[in-house]
Length: 251
Image (cartoon, rainbow, N blue to C red; front, side, top):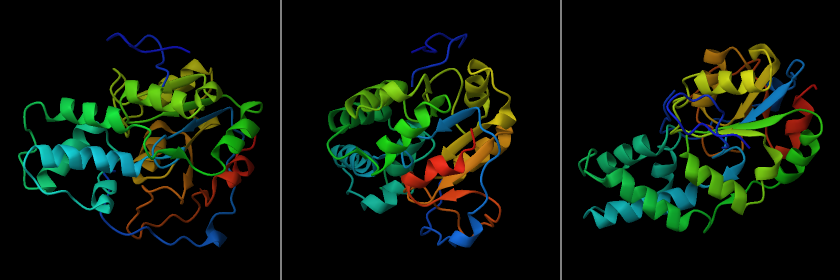
């Protein structure tokens, strides 16, 4: 396991804004196309590997109530997830009619979330088996906008850490998706050209990240971030269940 702790980001860390529309129905006939030869598979975390929306919503609402606001519906908070904790906190506070830049709000949210990190969060059904299947075929990594410490703790608690050589969190010097820096650094660590790597994720921000980095993309429609507001996804590979992921990756 390698990390990116310093500002030089010499090491890899272990470890399109969300919309507020309903999940798009995707016809399976548009998802038959497989990715080209893959030498690196990089997974998003929340909404792709794990269903964490309830714990994130509970922590966000605990913060709102502490600050004198009224709790928001879980589904509203889920639609705000995807660009890191700082963005989530600002969005939640604004939606609750509170000052989005309230001093200390981010730090307090991280404390509240840390207390609830694994209360309800689980790996999606079929993810452990998919990872085990892929592990011997292709190097695996994680690229997430979740803070590094929370990512490490969650992956260890769910028994998923051993599958991944590298994990890049959203608070490292490499920035957050859709900035391609983290994805490109993971490619470099695997000695892999960008067009031989694929990013597996559930959200518009994952699709934008892959396009920015010049990598392949595999979207997963089961994730809570799968909100594309009628976007044309023709030709974009889409897995509807974790068990389908290995069949999309030619190694």
